[in-house]
Length: 246
Image (tube, rainbow, N blue to C red; front, side):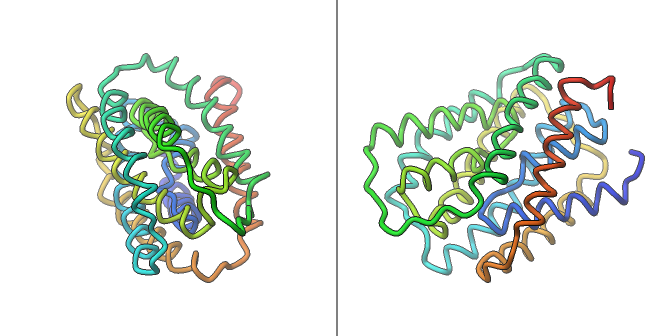
């Protein structure tokens, strides 16, 4: 890969930012790999593998802080895990995959630009049916696209006032982990390809995730970093739709 050092720096930055809010970072990893010309066959399993390490690191920190709400998590997970496996076992043509991913990247762009600081003073109890429906839908997309689903789940939890910021981060982190694992297992049934630099990817993402999880509790200013990440996602989305222009 050309500009490998730049890729590593951006990979660290993405893992740092996403983990600071309880995310695994798959949408960011996929955006980076799209910008650096990595093929979809490698992108999906690589993003999910990185998710496993970063999301678990983030969850461990938030769990120790006693922010995890198991009653809300389990219905989401029980619905999402089998659907993530189903999505991961499906083979999507490379061109269609790029278009779908280009559309999906618009979600974290909106998340980082317009829903950066949602405060929830009083949480509401969600209906079980909505949790199951939400978990299943996000789980399927997770396996199909190679994401963990946290970037979709977290703004929904906050906008519906089902959880506060820290609870959202804890639930999203474990949700990402179980979906990434299930989606990866689904992909294994069809055969997967990893980059020869996977060990380096994991080490760098893990380091970024570890630091990001620690800093996330400090509520340090993230506005400038989030704007930068949104810009990277926009460029990647544009490249996926119009590859010949970039």
